[in-house]
Image (cartoon, rainbow, N blue to C red; front, side, top):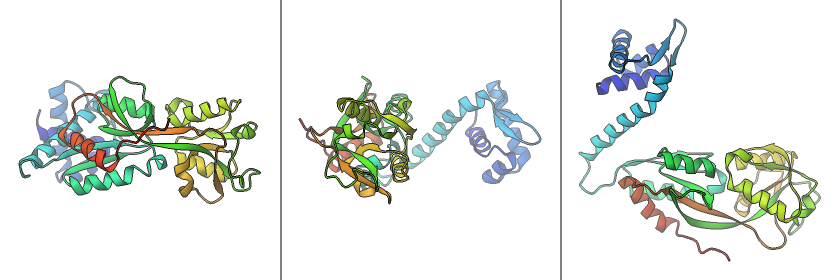
Amino acid sequence: MEIRWLEAFVAVAEELHFGNAAVRLRMAQSPLSQTIRKLERSLGVELFHRSTRSVELTAPGHALLPYAREVLAQLDVAAKAVKLPQGEVYGNLTLGFTGVLNHFSLPPLARAVQQAYPEIALTLVGRVMTQDAVQQLESGSLDLAFVGLPVDSSRINARLLAQEPFGVILPEGHRLAGMEAVDLAALADESFILPPRSAGSVLYEGTMRACSEAGFYPKAAQAITDPYMVMMLVAAGIGVAVLTEGVASMLPPGAVYVPLAGKPQYMNHGLAWSIRPGSKARDAVLELSETVLPTASPIM
């Protein structure tokens, strides 16, 4: 198997069109087709379903694609390694985050990485709920992730970054929108915009816990993963939502944030990574994060 065969395979797999892939690789279509055939013969499988109208990956093609991409990425890293001064940190780092709930942590860390380690290629993956983040950290598809704590995995390390009190997001014309604080029990008959239960969101768990302690089970109007879309639906009058205090400065027109009355309940924001040894890039960013995003003191 040759590197150029993998380069050809990835190009066709991403374009799903031999002509476009040939243009991308700056070669003729016939040699490209021959290259793919050589790769298929070497592996003993067909990688593409071909017809006069379409090109599609086969099951073996889908299985090969992430590994082919990884091989090419590592070659790129190796090429950089021989050109950089000794001791320079380089590599690829993939960071998962939820969305607006990470607005206080993601920008400063991303800026610090770019400034301190310009040779680290930082890939940001959005809309990653805590449960998904844990699975992707365990599988190696993520290097780091912003999560809600605690995480239920002995294979993941995490540290606390911040604790934010929960409040409610209400439509601007809601009867309780002008209150200084709202007793959650007063919303027992309302419809709630919630994260999907299956998404493994700590925000969902926090909402369920807060409502349970207020003596009711929330009725779901919609199940939405993106917290900003939750706020948009509240502004549209579809329902109400439980979110954290930090979103108050990011509300869309037509929505208001009101703190919860009584004993505060908090969402714990954390940074998580696999217990397995990581790359030098991951370890460098972890060390940098301790300065940029120091561990918070838990609120008792």
